[in-house]
Image (cartoon, rainbow, N blue to C red; front, top):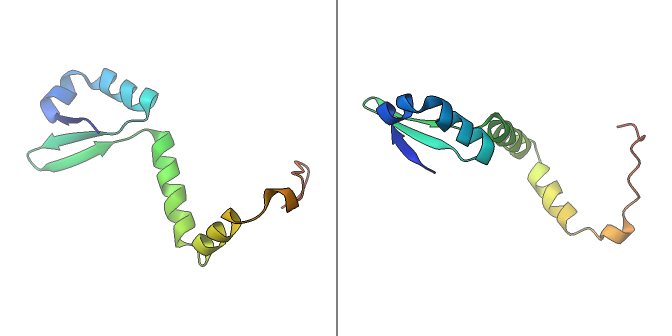
Length: 83
């Protein structure tokens, strides 16, 4: 993850943000008061979803159990199936 001081980031703001979005690579911004991290909306949404799923009771165990399922015994995907 690249690290920039706030002055360098400010001078090249548009290009820095564009790189974060295009390459999904966060940037750390150093300031006198502390640091900040800039990340793409796609990465942010993925992070929030991962946190949400990991906080669900038994979700991690269910995911791990699903990893061991035999794909040949699973029903075929039906896009019309109601959840």
